Length: 489
Ligand code: AHR
Image 1 (cartoon, rainbow, N blue to C red):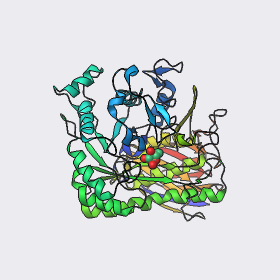
Image 2: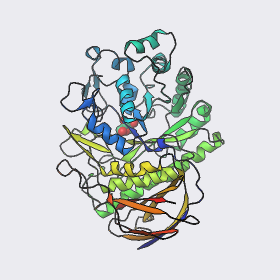
Image 3: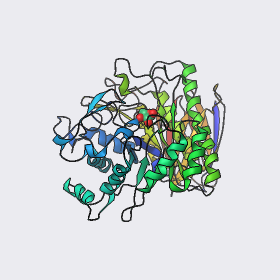
Image 4: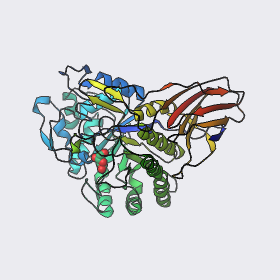
């Protein structure tokens, strides 16, 4: 198999906002508790309750933005339950996710401490479904006001003098479903009302985010844009890849045949159609493209691992998931100018995670390694390219690409989606001259994964089957792989 990737390396274009590589952490299963937060008294090494191993891996992965506290949990979450002395915090039952007790030991301050340690931007999704306008309004004030108000003083009393300056602000989640089962008309009216009382404090300007559609619910987008476009900065889209297409039996995360592999990638690639479709509707109401589309929940949703709590959504992660991650990030990059923050679901121990934990052990999944390789694209400028290669039996091109440039460094991530066939690539770079190049790859059988017994089965390794001449690279891409090439010009 052969591929030619023609690159216009001399003309960098649109910046890839780092927030396109964002993550999502919900009070769900072992994402927050166990996975990230173990509390100060835990024998697991931690800083202010956050696992040191996980935080350091998240920094390596390059998490630019983190959404919290949900998901469906967001519309049941009352922020005042999660502030103040730990012993006095309210206990509640997490009715959406496993019926376990939520002791609120991880709340607003802990989330912002996590973001500080990871070095990422916070994105808070507030409660419209079951919370009041006053509650939402005061949460913004608590976070962002430096004024002489009782609410701001309360933050001081809880140890944070300076305002947190939270910018990304979600006004409800999936309000067509778990967030209140609303019609788009009803939600749009509530959205307009709730967001009115989410004030800007000081220099901070809120980026107001409205709940958008699920999948191809074009009508939801139409109504929201028609009724509320001028009052929002972002509209969310949720789209999961369910390999079987059947929510009742989504398929195993680890046991699948090659047909299911192809089917999974075909479904993941549908993200491009969804983005184009929703943007076309948004264009009619926002021709200036001020409002960003935000895919703030995406990823593979498999059956839970056998023997685990069905409400915890814990699943393993193979090279198939890594292919979905690379393909999806490539799609986001092609729409970079129109997208706002996007978040894979979810960061640790839930759905398509970048990290799994078990007691004091931790591993980075194949998906995590893809994010780590793609980190080089954050804030870089996109390069135009054309891919000439065979199509696979699911109709997708065998090679998927992202190409960016930061000054004199060009980064390519080249994904060979084929489950068994290597592809040899020629990559002419146009008018530029190559000074040096190095490449590394993540590859394996489509079933390959990291387990707690063999946590480094899948990892990035140097890739030597690559050569460069003056203005062209040639390289072989192993089957089912992501190869990153860093070219100095
Ligand atoms: O990510 C799991 C759940 O999926 C979220 O809570 C919800 O928003 C979506 O349905």
